[in-house]
Image 1 (cartoon, rainbow, N blue to C red):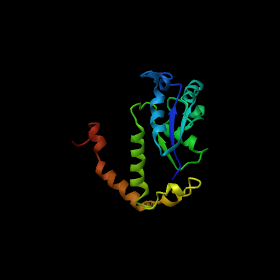
Image 2 (cartoon, rainbow, N blue to C red; image 1 turned 45 degrees about the vertical axis):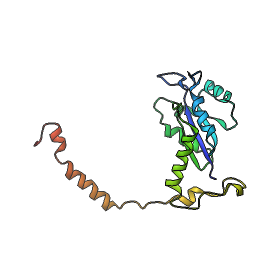
Image 3 (tube, rainbow, N blue to C red; image 1 turned 90 degrees about the horizontal axis):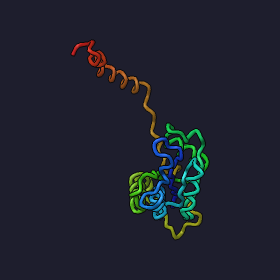
Image 4 (cartoon, one colour; image 1 turned 90 degrees about the vertical axis):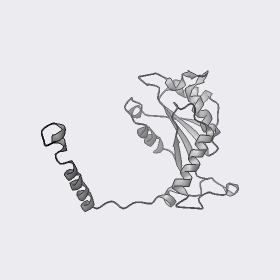
Length: 189
């Protein structure tokens, strides 16, 4: 079975609602609802809550599951303008896993069954067409990551030639010729 982890980015410095991810919803911190779903998903090995806040870190660890791991994040990816992708990339540079499931803490209605269905659909669509025998007999797993999914399933696509790119650009130029003038009221209508 491949190593599948969950990644939940939670920032403490939100300018709209500070510490929103640990605000009480239904008597529990908002984050706990998504942790429930991730813990209930049997395919997820560990759940990494990535935060810049000591308070969010404390509340995360009070959740009390051995599947939950706290991960820090640098100030560079803890700003209002930092993308989720930048946080994920920073996290991934220092860890080893086969697949990462991004879970937003602001999705309290998510269930473990939905996560399992999503992971199953991903494997059906993205893995099994390339390696029909990719599922491993779990009774024979010794380590848990015998197959390098990246090595077996990555299929590079050849880049387009410069002539093809140039032809596309010229076609777009012809298609939009005079459009800007029309928009600005300076050309034929």
